[in-house]
Amino acid sequence: MTTAPEQTDGVDIAIGVVTTGASPSVPTVVKVVQEGMLTHLGGLTAAIIHMDPTMPDEQAGQVEPIADGIRLIHARPAGAMATASGLDGWSESVRAVLGLSRRLHARAVVLLNADITSMTPVWIRGLAAPVLKDGGCAFVLPIYERGRYEGTLTQLFVAPLARALFGHQFWHPMADEFGCTGETAEFLLAQDIWTTDLARQGLEFWLPIGVAGGALTVAQSVLGPRVLNPTGPQPPLGSTVGRVAGALFSIAERHEAGWLDVRGSEPVAVLGAPPAPAKRSASVDPKRMIEGFLQGVRDLLPIWERILSPETLGDVLVLSEQATGEFRLTDSLWTRIVYDFLLAYRARVMYRSHIAQSLAPLYLGCAASLVLETRDRPDAAVAHAVERMARAFEAEKPYLVDRWR
Image (cartoon, rainbow, N blue to C red; front, side, top):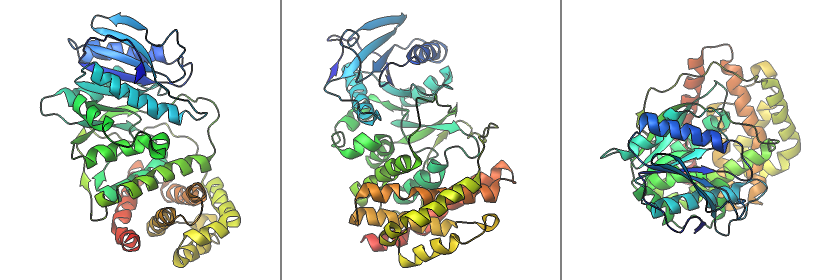
């Protein structure tokens, strides 16, 4: 249920823009959507759904005409409570966008991230057109152009773990933006995920897995660079890694029947030419990453002794004695670390939040190793190293499965 207009005429496309609190980016997103519709999807109608759990009563329910066949609907998920992080509000808002899209009888649903400042009108076509075509796909994930060391948590942890578990080669297995058919929206609304901690903390990771697990076709659309507008202080790395790891580990536990017998992986259709690494590159200091790894060894060893196998822990301790120039956390070691953490999370050897957050220094070691290996080599070396890592997760999967069973 949402606080939205009582009567709504049908549209071809429902485009959700989720915010939490006053957001100056909404008018910019509306302008991008309008141009994208007029330039690339002319003749189709659209409702831009601005969904915000903190929206004041006087704004919720308002409808503004934007252009011929395009209108802006301000709405609020009923009963949603925004948290300091905005995560609870976001998942409830996504659910409300999907629900309102069904009331509008939309053939396609697009969700946009209002914090991305690099969004262009082409993105509207990239996310909507593939699901509008006859015989098109049910769900579209974005592929973004990134700098060579941007998104290393996704490249070194999220993507290889999701690929090894479920067998799908996603470039960016996170659906904070996506496109889907109206039927897929209805399928998602019918799932029992929405009131769970997983939905509140990691819905964007679950959505691709949930759709693919429902035997619905998924494709990936190349959009462009992903540049985020900084919104206040960034959370500590431990909190970020903890949330992401907790979400992935919860998905593995929830959907064990869908991955235990999966071996290898299959490519997922890519619409457009896969992007080369962007030329922009943030300054990356592997020495500071290694310092974070070593601080973890000093502070978290009693925790890791309960999580890691003796062999894996021994290899971590040997690594902590290496000089910076020789520091290399191998693909096999990182894979076993992640699988040990997943097993410990499932076994609840301690508070799950402590398990997930204590992975952060080990992730820093893995990221530092990637930078040290590739910083003086061409961009292709990074892509090669990331692909090699993903294959290591697949090759080591029996290590996980044997202990899981």
